[in-house]
Image 1 (tube, rainbow, N blue to C red):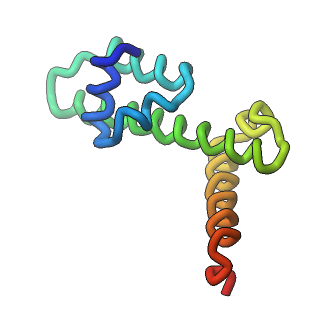
Image 2: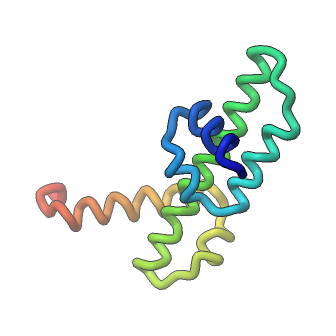
Length: 109
C-alpha cells in the first residue's frame, strides 16, 4: 500500500493513517486489492468499497489486539488467529474489559 492509497483509505473510513499503518501487510494488501478490483462509478460502488474497507479495518484492528492478548496470556498469535472471527472479537472485548477493570478497581463493583 502506497502513501496515496493509505491516505485515501483513511479518508474513506474516517480513521487515522496511523491506525491503518499499524496493520499487518495481509490487511493492507487486501485494502489495496479493493481499490484495484472495484471501479467506483456511482454511490453503490462507493458503498461497496466502504463496506469492504471497513470490514478489513475491523479485522486488522482485531489482529492488532490479538497480538496484545498473546503477550498477556502466552497464547500464540497463530492460535488466536486460527479461531473464528466471532471468537476473536469476544476474546479482544473481554481482554480489554479485564484490563480496564484491573487498571480501575472501582469498576469491579
